[in-house]
Amino acid sequence: MNQAKVAIADDHPLFRTALKQAVVDCMPDAGINEASSFDDLLDVIAQSPELEIIFLDLHMPGNDGFTGLTQLQNNHSDLIVIMVSSDENPDIMQKAINFGAAAFIPKSVNLATIAQAINTVLGGETWLPESMPVNRDTELAQEHKKLAQQLAQLTPQQYTVLSLVADGQLNKQIAGILDIKENTVKKHVSAILLQLGVYNRTQAGLVYQQLMLAPQENITIE
Image (tube, rainbow, N blue to C red; front, side, top):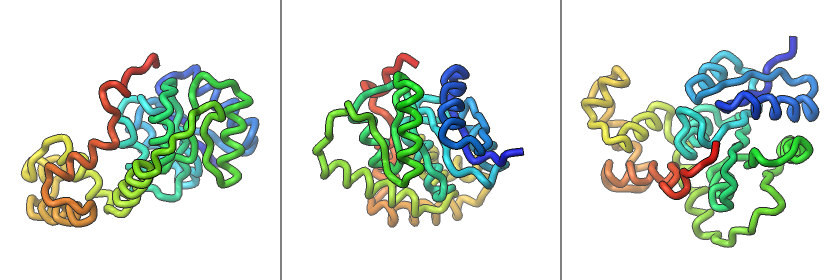
């Protein structure tokens, strides 16, 4: 039996099938696991230590914008993440790369293009559609990359605490959700503020919310 080296996380079975075909063409010996939600993906990762590449749907259940991407980078820094979506907004595609994705594959492309993207990533390079306009806002790109690096340096539990802070949860509520002491939450929050270079939990929450899609970006035909 082939070891599962690839996970396809997408809530659309037809597109998962197309991705599987492209992966098999490029990596014939790679086993493939599938997930239809982000929580399912986390279960797949926990059960498949040999995973190398993950295809992550931008709009799948449990994944809000790039929160899933940065969580994977925080918890599993050795995994290669390729974003996929029917959303072809150039700014969103560029954000994906800035936040650490190895590629962004629009769902409208054909199998040959998907295979090209996979081969590019296997060659150690990032991939975006050739037709995508070049984004020359290098300052914004550097801000995104810096944020991704800061988030990657949090411990997995600190990352979870930050997501709950951004959701408006108080320390006592976070302690209950995570089944830890409130004093432990306070220590995590202090460490998060230091790592992100901000002064209070409101600012920390706003930093995390940069990973989410703005309302006008969240329009999708998926």
